[in-house]
Length: 364
Image (tube, rainbow, N blue to C red):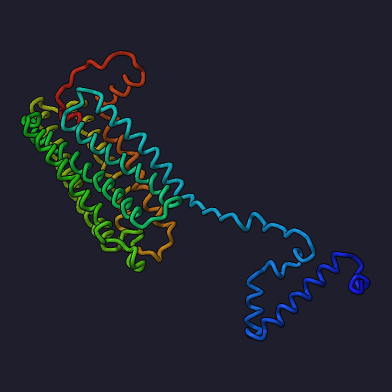
C-alpha cells in the first residue's frame, strides 16, 4: 500500500519493483565479482536494459533494410560482354549446324571454317559464364577454369584463321594437287596440333601461371599474370606476322596468274582485271579487320598493368571479342555453298541436292 501511494498506476509500480530487484542483484554479485564485470555481464543481455520490455511493451522489430544484404552493382561493361557472347554463340552455332547437316560441306576448307566457328562458340559461352561467375559464384578455382576456357577459345580462333590462310595459300600454290587425300590428312593433323596448342595455353592459369596469391603480378586480365599475358601477346604478334606474309604471297600468286592469262590472250580482259582487284581488296579487308581488332589489345597488354583504369581494358578487349562475331560473315556467309545452304534452311524451298564442285582460285 505504501508503494502504491507513491505511483500513479500499476505500470510505474512494476517498473520500480524491477529496478529495485536489479539493484539488489547487483549488490549481491558485487561481493564476488567486481562491479565492472557485473555491469559487463548485464550489458551483454540487452533485454534486461530494454525499457520497452520493462514497461510491458513489445520491442519494435529491426528495420527490414538492415537485415537484407546489399545487392552487387552490375558493371555495364560486363553486361555488354555477356550480350556480345550470346550473339557470338548464336551466330557461330548456325554455322556449325549448316556444316554438320549439309553432306556436301566436307572439304578441308569447310572443316577449318567449322573449327573456327566452334572456337568462337566456346568464346561466346565463356563470356556468358564469366558474367555468371563474377556475380553469382565466387570461387578462385572456377575463375581459373573460366580464364583457361577463354584463353583456349580465343587462341584456337586466331590459330584457325592462320590455318585457313595456309589452306588458301596451298589452294593457289598447289592448285593441281590440292584436291587429294594428302590435303585432307594435312588439314586434320593441323587441326589436332592447333587445338593441342590452344589447350596448353589455356591450362597455364590452372597450372600456376596466375595471380590469385600475389595481386601485384596481375595483368590487365585477372587472374592471368603478367608473364602469361606477355607470352600470349607475343605469340599473337608472331601469328599475325605469318598471316601477313601468307596474304602477301597470295597476292603475288594472284597477280602472276593474271599476267599469265594476259600473255595467253595477248591482253588482260576487264573481267580478269576486276577479279584480281576484287580479290586483293577482299584480302586487304580481311587482314585489316583482323589487325584492327587484335593488335591494340596485344600491344596494350604488354605495357599496361592493374594500375591502369579498367575502362581502358574493356575498350581494348571489346574489338577483339567482336572479331569473333565478324568471323562468320567473312569466312562462312561469303562462301557460295554455305550461303546456299543457309537460304535453303531458311526458306525450306527444296532439298539440298546440288553437288560439290572443286574450289578454284577465283573463290579464294
